[in-house]
Length: 336
Image: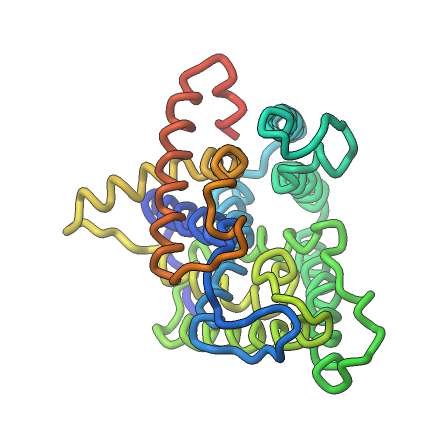
């Protein structure tokens, strides 16, 4: 491993944000026919293994944030401002979702914590900036001590649960599985910062990808066959060594891409990357509005290619809405 010189990789990070948004939206679309139904014995097929890439969605967002922000060493005033805007954005857009749920008769009015936490990612990012500021005031070795501790709990303990469950499906240690109040995100934040200037041999990300997919497949088998319903390749995966390894692979693959020979595609990806936060926010609202037309809502599943096309439609519509709202008085809630 060698260190690269500091240089701008604007497109590489935009591409990572666009790819992360794609994985998140695809996961939320959730209508891919993976050949598995609740109650059946789960074993990883090709489609199911590819579906596991959705586990990289949120981790890649955290890693890109780490690559772009950690080395800037925000002071207390800037950190407080950023945290405040994230919390305000989470509450504001969460209230918009509650209004949409009332309009679509999806749910009655309620201001319970679960409803207000609809955009939990924004609150987790706020917590992450607070933790990063505290750690930045300590000796540098403290950062790696925190990362090492989090790799043990919850990352390693979650893997232990998976392995114990595979050995004995009746095991009761599933309470070990945790995201530890989303503090697993600290590992991804510092991974992004560490990897932003590191150069590795070409075989390294491939090894990380194979290892990550293997560990995620083990987790999927443990989860589905223990709880007897379809494994969600997103939320349950984030605080795992498999998701970490696979996310590192994807980060290294995409980080330095340029696509100079495909200028139109590059502009399109840059557009999606610039509006990645808006995609995250507005695709959920669009799904509330158009969900009743979704085959998934009617208990139907579609071919993976069709699911990808539906995902891209949601992404483009969400990005356009985001671009328009960014120019409005509430646009600052999309510029975080």
